[in-house]
Length: 124
Image (tube, rainbow, N blue to C red; front, side, top):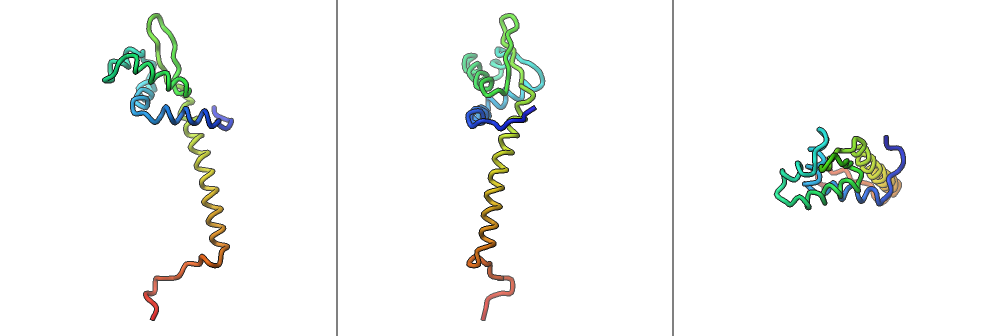
């Protein structure tokens, strides 16, 4: 469960990881259960090493966990990962809504910003 505010560094890692199509696909595929890195690599038109790097970015962002099972590295999506992303977006939304509300109040208080009623047609 996510309780504390996320640090800027954590949010940066999270959204950097989610910014890539391949990494988002890896994340979706691993939601259904753990997959080995070699199994994941079979799907993409890139080297095994490139897929390993994508998994490492996801792991550093806390979106997946890896566990060694024999010669395989099994990748699993962290169930709290979506909650962290949602929390980061909720915090951004809250900050921006507060700014927009403050601007609206300032504009409402400024007598020079009254809107003219244009529904009746042009003045004669």
